Length: 246
Image 1 (cartoon, helix red, strand yellow):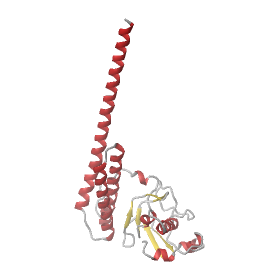
Image 2 (cartoon, helix red, strand yellow; image 1 turned 90 degrees about the vertical axis):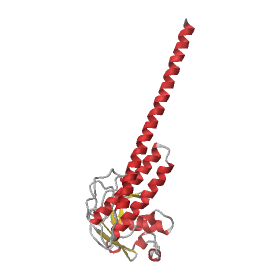
Image 3 (spheres, helix red, strand yellow; image 1 turned 120 degrees about the horizontal axis):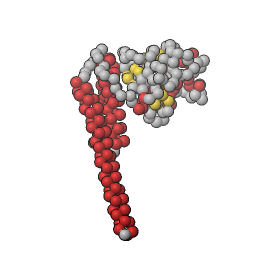
Image 4 (spheres, helix red, strand yellow; image 1 turned 30 degrees about the horizontal axis):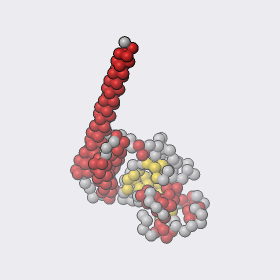
């Protein structure tokens, strides 16, 4: 009798284990299908916008070029994705592409469309609310909340080598060189320090920003009491900035 009870208990426990594993596999498959469908939905939405929008304004063309780049990147990620995390990464890339689409539509003066989900990479970076202008080793760099002839490069906000950079329009895509290597890294960080130095009173960000910035246009070399080359160990970066890094 006791042996029969043990056998029955083993059978019940074995059946429960098999059922639990099947349920878990079904749930995982369902979750994977959901995130795959969600990623493809944003990817297809991005593709439709990339194909249907156009314009000759430099800010529009640049934003659309960045959107197209994200579209191709998201497509490649979707082709290789096999896990929930990989599909979520593809979704993030597609949504980032749509932020460039939204920027292009604003530059065209048309309805930007519905709000987009927040980008994980842009969390805490904030958004530019006032224009600013700085000089670094003789070169002028501008940024502001609106596109213009002098600020045709949109950035959706994010972290550049560990520091938050707010969403907005910039005169040059200095963050790309800051993500590179060698002199480009230092050059990009110098520009970031100039544009977003915490020593200035007006932050120029929205309420959610995590960093401080320059409120009024000005010459950083004069306002901070010195030359940026001297502030960073006395090195001469004039030739490096003028040599085509930007």
